[in-house]
Image (cartoon, rainbow, N blue to C red; front, side, top):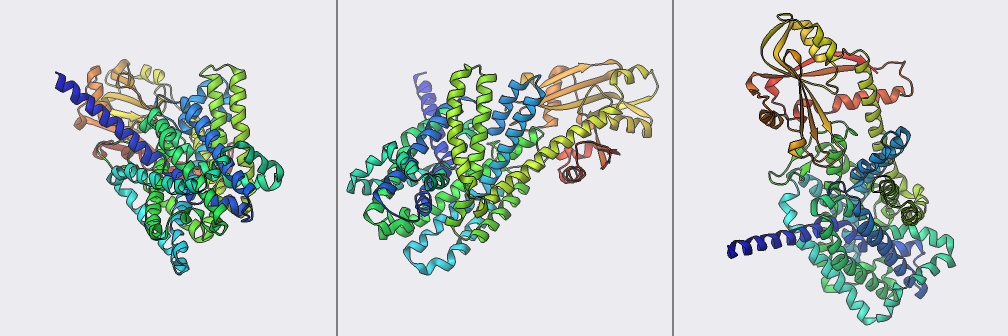
Length: 631
């Protein structure tokens, strides 16, 4: 008995260790590789001028940006807003929408904020692989300028490998992520510590007054500088988004006890290096390394940036799946790359679009210095919207006292808006790119949602109520044939068009008719005992509502097996699934839905995967019935 208890205790301890290590490898890759370029780009904004005031001021701003934005806002406050353990801006949007029940205008604004924040996340997902991998490879220039012509080709080769490996899934290298990031943080911390020991006076840079002095002594230059300071906390949204995978405690513990100290040691070390060797401003991160360690550092940095990029790409896949489940995007093909881990997925279309965008960025901007101008807008935009949604949730759902909540989130909002407005100054220099990506995704999401609403309204306008239809049925008329017919429908109170088409053309009804509705709830996972709602009607008609969370995987055959427990048995070989396939036409009479958006909706509808594949319905049991409808 004691041995069993000890074994269980060891297993729990090992599981906890894996959570902490996994969180380190997945969550902190992006923010952990920021030292590669942050200090360098800050001094580019200062014209490359190395003075005592500039170095102390920059380090002070970087330190307090990490403390206020990451430690206080995300780690201490935002991570409290979890949707049954899940985080991320779409999960937060689902929570905030609960405050808008019966208030359609507020609901529209909350939904718009959530969709815009999610759209900007894709803009971040495009830039992170480009700037991270490019900045790592640029370390070769520090060793010798002979590598200069090969930086772009090497970067592109690494990106090709990175995106090609996505179809195999992150599981094959997932076990390496944590240990490699441990090595990374230990190495960058030690490199910084060596310089701090040589110049311990650099620790005075932790005083926030140095940062404030740099901002207020030269307000315009300081405002531009904030656009580069943003780079210190890129990836902080990942802390919140990945909360469902690892839990709040491992993420917080990793940050406070390991990641934050390692980052601070490296940043302070870079500052000490600049005071001693001002010419190191061209690349202070790699100048920390001794000559013999330069090439190993480039290799380690390249691996670390690939890990950081992998995490962002996986986050884009996860965001896409959530958006599809919640009805914000059309159905995409989602491949599962692991039989054990449901979260390991591959979305081919998103992977291809990200790859093309990242390659265009590298070829267009050519260096991490130029890409720094494009970075920041998407990050700070998402951060700002996260703050607004968290405040709505805190006051409207969690029932925080309004005054303390407004003061706290108002402070965070002021900080977010300062960083966002500073980055807006870089729109012409390259900031337009993530904004264009985010705007495009937002147009797609909003058009899809509005089109679905219009389509549902148009279907309901000419539909026959199910109760009325059942009253017209008589024994023997129409003729009933053996078997079960399942009609997929968005509204089980109305007769599906596919049922009427089948009755019109074949003149028969199946012995048993099931109207099945798929309902996605605003929680990540629906318990099995709440999954199904069955209503038995006259004439052997039944309505079945199947509920999934936005992180659940729809699986109709598994649902049919569950229905057996509710005394509604299915023989799959005697069951036919009827699905309507409509041709959508453009109508000139639909108000407030422009013609170009109608055509975009029709294009999205035509390119999405069919319901058979998405819901895992056996294709040999499916009957598709066509029709046409105008929007």
